[in-house]
Amino acid sequence: MEEINLLVMIEVQPGKRAIQIEAFEALRPLVLAEPGCIQYELFSDDEDENKFILVEKWASQEALAAHGKTAHMVAAVARNPSFRAKPASVIRMSPVGR
Figure 1 (cartoon, rainbow, N blue to C red):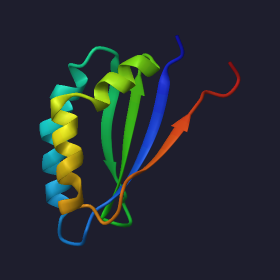
Figure 2 (cartoon, rainbow, N blue to C red):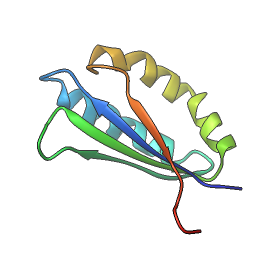
Figure 3 (cartoon, helix red, strand yellow):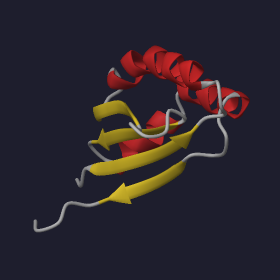
Figure 4 (cartoon, rainbow, N blue to C red):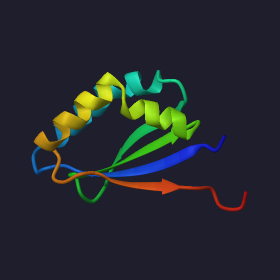
């Protein structure tokens, strides 16, 4: 099975940075406990406080698909528009040179 590597670009509405961080901190232990989750980390942009990058690594496409169907992710996706400036942009990456 091929690991799945994702970069998720997130931009929040001005003044709502703390909500994004709180939402991530609540989700992180739940996501890391999911079968097949290898990495789930949020980074903030040093030059724009309203921008974040979420780095995800999954053991398989099946694990990623199951992740999107969990109750905590369904609830998070429903809440995101209340503080996000726009939908997240997802980049799927593959290692080079293997």
